[in-house]
Length: 229
Length: 97
Image 1 (tube, helix red, strand yellow):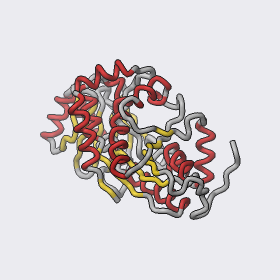
Image 2 (tube, chains in turn blue, orange):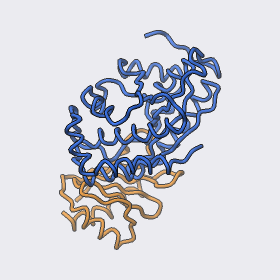
Image 3 (cartoon, rainbow over the protein chains, first blue to last red):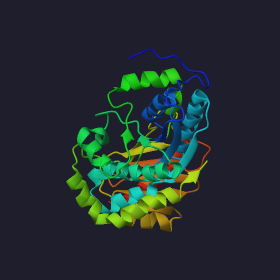
């Protein structure tokens, strides 16, 4: 991995400046701010989307995420528009109506749907996520495939081939690591035994329990009710 | 019945509680009983129930594991208060095993 130095404000590289606008799904964790940074470094314009998981997450996760976005703004020297989208009701619907071991895949598919709506609104070209292959249950190749197949916009995964130590090294270099490891942010509704190899067919069966019209409406509602700052 | 209380991570504002043995709680009944005692239910499904009372948020699983954390933006939760809250919860757990 190449060496990185802590960038100062506005020193990120500008190769793609004015050419690419992206919606970054940002949680309070270590990975997604690093993924967003890597694209900022290239000069992409970012819009941040945080899925508010309450009551299945702590309010601290929102505070943490906003601090992380503040840091990304410092690094890039540019303002990042923020969407805070309510996701707790979606999680609840999946828990009530679908197989619980697929919760994480269903959750991510809904995040993608909401992100795609934000991207359309903002005129963005793609979505960025902090996924790294095999790092957690929802990030196996079969699950990524199943998650992808709900939207038409590209999903960029700058961290896909990095391991956790490599991601942490970048996070430390850019000053997001210490913010990311602050308490709060973990999801309380994750299944004990999440599926690691779902298929689009299996997901379709589960989502049919909710219905495609209702799923679309849930995504729209999540987008419509998002707080924008 | 007793429970071990621990902070899920360094600096956490809340506590996780693990009962001394695995339970099979009926969460809907538990939630009703807690509601009668002044708790406000936020969510109750077979797998999880989330309630609020006096600025604290309680997340309870059928196994009896639970989280107690401050529901508002500021402030933490002392071990002493967490123990009191946990003891209160355990009394309700006894009724819903």
